[in-house]
Length: 479
Image (cartoon, rainbow, N blue to C red):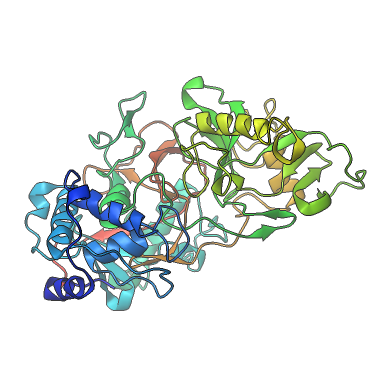
């Protein structure tokens, strides 16, 4: 819940006092608050109730009531410090526009009984359900049961959404659209081969503004806490992208990755933050002999043998979240860039005094192998790539199909939004949030996307399956 005006000040005044200024004087207001949250035990990518941004920073700065499961008291800060941080946050996207906002205005305001969210920064109204397509396809084919879809399907789904109810549109609005992303964004860290801006910190796009400015998240944190689960003999599989050892066909595209959210295999630049599932070629000495073709958990359920690919997997599909082997570059949720993934595997093999993790020194990243005729696109790209180790695990052993997620879709609440997926969302080219989607993407066969799994903005093949959030331009201030 978001509070404004005197309500925000009264909540803050009742809850906080002046902190010792000496150790924080050199920091900017928002950094002071982040430091206070860290000192109080809140962490980026932590469990619900312990998240630095959603459970500490946002309640202090924006007056959003923390969830019931907050595990520790909020730190004490002054109302002046909170107000200064909030002012800077609101000014981050567009100082001229944000100067028109009332001093205590909230950037996100729930409307229509919580079904929509007015974004005062972008002057748009978002649909609060961040994965409506999972339960409402509007009769559009090719929407996966998880809610993901390719770009052409996303465009059709939005069009039918606007034509819903005899043309009145869903919830009485017929100008819903995909979020826009400008080709040139000075807030981004990287530039592509055609001059397009991409990478982390891209707050000039609609989804980037939502992630970085309105929700106050910071790369490479996921908007949704990492998943703790059991899938067959595995545990903690993340419905996201995993690194492979194999370089992309075009070296500029980085390394091949595999999605356990959709079953898509494709390339990712090495600077992105993905997860790691270690493996060892062959069957481990001393384990029971293989029988049949199904997955076989070895003693202690720490490793899993796949007789189809003749690979032994680590059963914990997100070990780095709790075991970094001394590497500080790994995010709290276990994600890391490719260079760190290689170094983490090396450290894994050198651990335990050189005996290696679980007594093995030949752990490695999985490979994709040669071009796969089963891939829906050329080479090693697309759905149905069963020749790679992770592709075989997804399709043959776990019995999943293209577009399936390894675990059920997220129902997580993030601020005023719900059903937020910690994955990639479609976006489109546009000069501003109120601009219509341009017919052509950043490159032939590609469109924009933004990750609520780590804050990375990039482009994606239009045949991939991503999730959809929508809004409609709404210049009128929220009541």
